[in-house]
Length: 218
Image 1 (spheres, rainbow, N blue to C red):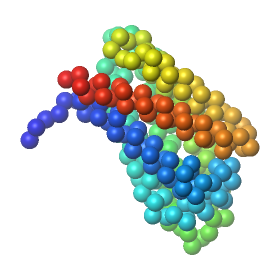
Image 2 (image 1 turned 45 degrees about the vertical axis):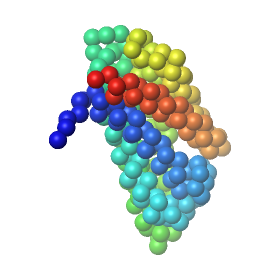
Image 3 (image 1 turned 180 degrees about the vertical axis):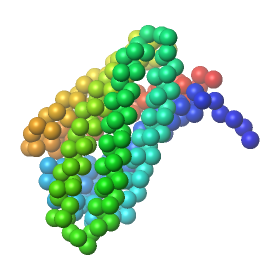
Image 4 (image 1 turned 135 degrees about the vertical axis):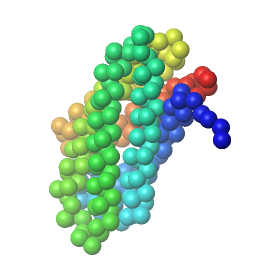
């Protein structure tokens, strides 16, 4: 049986992980494409989850899997900066990304439970969904800060695509802004969620570029 290097596997993780998570996030019922619901109207979100219980459960499992796979690759990417330019900044951003992923994983697990409890009706889970939205919003802010720091650190290194690192860093800043605005104004939450989705798409593209470079470095 053949072996695969740590760098190569980490590179593949930075390609596959965020792509899987992003696709499943986009097709989650109540999200951006299927049974679209206003995140500021928790009853609508719960109804969408319960109305598509199977898909909700599948995406609720695959989003965390994708995020964890992504973090595995990202952590090695940051570790590889050790002793060089930007390592300290990247290390500061890594725990923020980790905490945001933990929050999203918890939210996904609770959403699976909500989707399978259709007999109780949407109204029974409105307070729970409000909590999930709050966790998700805070996760967006933390992830944005972490992504900005890591991408900014990567931009200082010659082996990385500096232009895309700057773009990813900017996307992180925008994600933070959308999280703050969405958290403070429920009337803006739906729009901010859509803009945040675009930011995650941009960061995913950067992650793919970095991942491909890592996987081909050995």
